[in-house]
Every structure is written in structure tokens, then in C-alpha cells.
Image 1 (tube, one colour):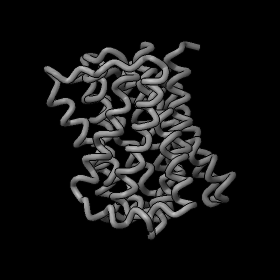
Image 2: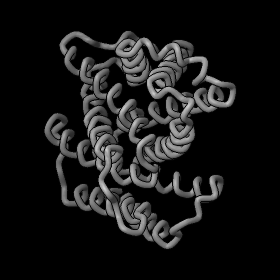
Image 3: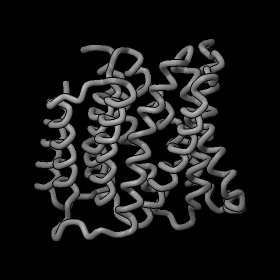
Length: 285
């Protein structure tokens, strides 16, 4: 198996775990979403920066000539993180998951425009099959009834999809991937808290002992997954293909929820949806 594919699968597994942890944190009414959306990436960024420095791989990233991409990175990730957490507060993860899968389409389209990657029938088919599979997996009787949480989730998915393509544009101009990734967490996190500094008064309430453990674990796993995702691109994978494979994390999340969280409803839907998502991943390989 090719190295980039192994790295993509590793990133997919990490994303599944961090998705469960984010839901557990966001569902706690004592958790301030601004604090969560800022401190989680700040902690992850610090951990990644320490790794880059201690491993001797750190080189100051390139900013000159791509200033607009750095500004977009901060804005897109800050918006995506906060809106994603806000969507989880207004709607069930079972409803947000299919919407979040639409971010793949934004990556496929934007990577074709800005990275000159080809839009193939294979990519389109894989994306459509995965989105249908996710919808079936999480669909409840009566289907979706559009609410504020769904609309917020759509905007978040768009921001995440566009942000990954923008990241690749920065990485292509950077000395190495390890030196850039910490800033993709640190800067959006700092920006989020700067926009709403009053949220710092809720830090103590948000970071209770149990939540602090969740947050530290989330930061570590998300940071590792992010690094693996970019390393997959550096090892030869296309941004659009990696984004499609990344949706396999929804299958792993469903399995974790089934085993650990005892979410046993709509088993037939979940099995059929899982098979479709896996088929979508296989199509793109």
C-alpha cells in the first residue's frame, strides 16, 4: 500500500475519534463554544509546534507573496470551527454528519480551480455515493426538517472544504509541512478569542476537570490527524482524493458510537449507509 494512502487512513481514524470528543464537549451546556473553539486549536497548535522544534524540522514558514492565503486560512478555520460547534448545539450529530460530508465537494471543486487537479467522473461518483451513504446512515424517519443548525453546518462544511485547498496552496510555498501545520491551528484559535475576549470569563466553567481531559485528548488527536492529513498530500496524494477518503471517518465514528455510546437505533440504515460510504472510498482508490 502506498505511503500517502496509509497516512490518509491514519488521518481518517484520528478524525473519527476527535469527532466523538467534540460532540461530547459541545453537548455540555456548561461549555462555552468560543472557549472550546479557541483553546482546542491553540493547545493542538502548541503541541504541533513543540514537535516541529524538538524534532529539528522547524523552519519559519513562507508568508511573503501568499499573505492573502494566510488571512484566508485564519478566517476560514476560525469560522469553520466555531460554526461547526454551534451547529452541533442546535442539531444532532446524526443530522450534521451528512451536511459536513458536503465539504468534500467544495474541496474537489476548489482544488480543480486553484490546484489544477482534474475533476473526474470517478471523483464525482465517489463524492455523491459517500454523501448519499452518510444521509442514509443518519437519516431518521421523516427525513430532514431544515433548521438553523443545518444551515450553520452547511456554512461550516463549506469553510472546511475551502480551507483545505487553501492550506495546500500555502504548503506548496512552504519549506516543509511540519512547520506550517501548527499555525493552521494556533492562529485561528487566537483570532477566535480576540474577536470575543469576554468569553475568557467562562474559561474556568468550561475547563472543569472532566472537560479539561477531553479537551487535551481532543487537541492531541486532532493535531496528529491534521499532521497525517497534510503528510499524505506531501507523500503524493491529491487534495481532492484525500478529502474524499477522509469521509470514511464517519463510518468509524458510527462504529465507535455503536460500541461505546450504545447508539443502536436504525441498524439497517447504518449498515447500508456504511457500505455505500466504503464503496465511495473504494471507487476513488
